[in-house]
Amino acid sequence: MEKENLLHNIRHSLAHLLATAALEHDPNARLTIGPPTENGFYYDIEFSEGKTPAAEDLKKLEKQMKKLAGRKLPFEGREVSPREAREIFAANPYKLELIDEIEKKGEKVTLYTTGDFIDLCRGGHVENTSEINTDAFKLERIAGAYWRGDEKNTMLTRIYGLAFETPEELDAYLTMIEEAKKRDHRKLGKELGLFIFSELVGPGLPLWTPKGTIVRELLNDRIWELRKAKGFQKVTIPHITKKDLYETSGHWQKFADELFKIQTREEHLYAMKPMNCPHHTQIFDAEQRSYRDMPQRYCETTMVYRDEQSGELSGLSRVLSITQDDAHVFCRENQIEQEFFAIWDIIDTFYAQFGFKDLKVRFSRHDPDSFEKYLGTKEVWEKAEDAILSLLKKRGVEGYIDGKGEAAMYGPKVDFMTKDSLGRTLQVATIQLDFNQPSRFGLVCMNEKGEKEQIVMIHCAIMGSIERFMATLLEHLNGAFPFWLAPIQVAVLPVSEKHHEYAQKVFQTLLAQNIRVELWDENESLGKKIRNAKMQKIPYFLVLGDKEIESNTVTVEDRDNGSLGPKDLETFLLMTKEGEK
Image 1 (tube, rainbow, N blue to C red):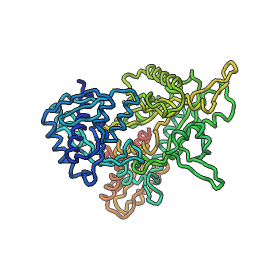
Image 2: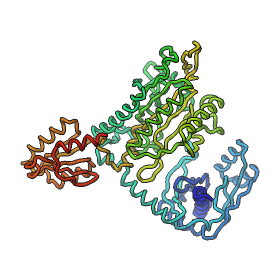
Image 3: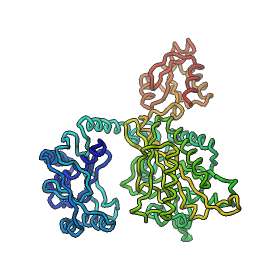
Image 4: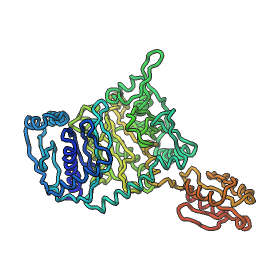
């Protein structure tokens, strides 16, 4: 068995052992689902009153799981009729709901037995529990989770576990988790003074300080440089819209619960925009377009707003106000390839500068079993997905990740996946192909024959959102921004008051060269100033004392490489110019 499949089966099997242990803890508990995850497994359970386990109970559950694994229990699967399955799970409404869905889809109902435990399951297990290394898994934590992710449903108890093939892999992952805690972007953002949250403003609404705003704008400027070279133009739209726009686009029907709504004093209903594409269609549609005008490329960095559940908000990773570096290309079908690949080139260039050079592709397509979630017809979706598959082939992509069910509601997309410096898998940029919104809005151009031709939209956000990208970048770099992006690039540190005059001259020289520099001439010890510069992760700090004044130099301390010794100011300026690239 391939390593990936074996690990999947180990994790899935452990979910069953967890369920067995949970039932021994509370025989009246109602089990729901227990899937494998990227690093382990979980099981969602409704426990009896007073029986919900606490964090201190995890060790007992884990001990019982290891005891079960030591019995070398086989996993035995069998197909049953929906009626028989309902009889077995008659006392469990969650399982009955799942059985109804399986039957509705016309799929087989299968059960897996492990010892005395029987579960509704599609399979994917080890042959018997002896294949599980009992030193290579650990119950991690307990959380709450609504049944089917819907806050209107029962709140369940979710028990998470970690699982690997070997104890060494588990230890490595736990070490990574500890390092991740140190690099948490919320912690780093506070230490570096980049953003804050206010209880008066509300959760999920970050406020950006002057330093954080510098970083945001520099990132956006870098993307604009790349887009400008590809022929994009900036546009600007309002933050609210009449309901009519989103009814036409389809977002009102599919997205209504996530819209912030505004009732005016004249009782008109408006919405805060959750995305920009419908607004951009109106700019395109404001005048008649000829094939000679195509493509039209619009871009805009602007906030959108989504009414996320409070329990899902997390630092900058999940917020209510999302700053998208958004762009939309309106083009003909025969221009899709050139426009798609132009955006792809921008993505490769932008991410490479941060060390994300090995971008993987996920082809995010629709789920044919849940077509009601999407706009348009199956024929249109087939056309769009075939077009993307053709593009992947021409780009030389092999072994893409199949993202069944991950498509946007209006079209399939290419998501770019990478790993950060801790080895965590991340989704970064995305390019989406949309035949549906142009159809709904009647977007056309006049072709060479003087006939109306429906156009295509390509959606792309390079950072996805500035908030999420900042969270990713802070943790990936451990807060140590490259020189061109650092909010403070250089700190000038005079040793004592008698060196202030020379320090002021150095400061003014650097300032004149548009370097983001600070002069720290407060009455503090040099050691404290140096510690502060290191804590703020400033790329360079310059120490100025008697020797530097005598030789007309600066002693350069490099954040990443330590002391570089004395340099004349002209040499140091050349170093900073190199760092701007």
